[in-house]
Length: 66
Image 1 (cartoon, rainbow, N blue to C red):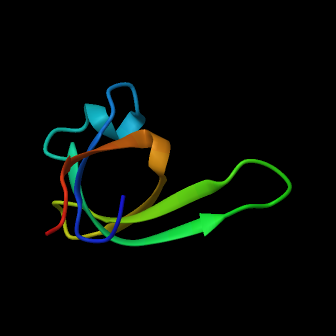
Image 2: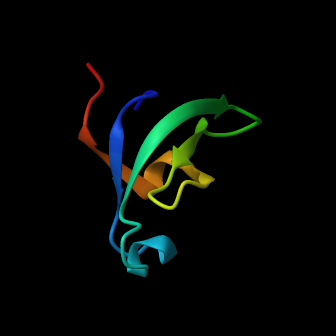
């Protein structure tokens, strides 16, 4: 998962249930590794124009950037 990828929220995540917000564009990614497993946070541009931060396990890649 990298900036420019189009992702879809996995079924069961709270945002999945909102109409029109099942897809998002990755604008940036941040990897944290603090005394445990590596966690990747994605900055996602939503269809509404707002940016949300979600963990990478909540989404799946639909279209990879060029």
